Image (cartoon, rainbow, N blue to C red):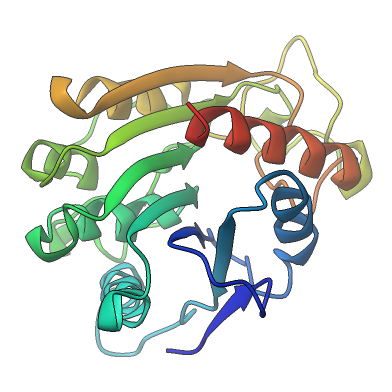
Length: 246
C-alpha cells in the first residue's frame, strides 16, 4: 500500500490520516490536504488509495486490511507518536475495524467520522443493493452492522461524528443532475445519508470514547465533487481543525 505524506520535508510527531469514501483518491484529496496543512502546521497529512473492487470478497473487508497496512507503515520505528483520523462515508467501515486493533489503540487520539455510512457485516447481505441507508430510507438493520462493533473498540480515542444535513436527495436519487447544483437545499428533500443511521452510529460509541455530534447543513455529502468545492474544502478543513485542536 503506497502512502503519500505532506509536506514531504516535515518531520513531525503527529499525523492526520485521510480515509476516503467511494470514489475518493489520494490525488483528489490534494485541495483538502493543502487547506488543512496551511492551518495545521505541526502535522503531517497522510493520503492513500483504497482498492475499489474485489472478485473474491467484500471490498469493505479488503479496505479494512489496507487501512491496517497504512497504520503499520506510519508506526514503523515509532515514526509518529500521535495519529488522528478523518474518515468520510464508506471509509467509516475500515476505520471502525481499525479501532478494534489494540496494537494501535495508544497512538490514535481523535477520530472524525464525517457523514459515515453504516454497512452490514453478514455475508447474507454483502451483495445487496441496500448496503447503506440513503436519506429517504428507514434505518432498520436486519442483521449486524459495522456500527455495532463500535462497542469493541480499544483505547481512549475520542470519536466525533459529523452529519451533513443538506437536503439534495430524493426517493429516486439526487434532485439536481448537475454536480454544481447539489449544494442547493430543497425543503422537500433529504440528506444523502439517513439521519437516523448517522445518529445511531454516534449513540453506539462507548461513553469513554464519545466526542461530539455535529450537524452541518451547508456541505453536500460528496465534498470533492458536488456543489461549490472550494467552499466545501474551506468548511471541512475548518471543522477538522476545530475538532483535533481541542
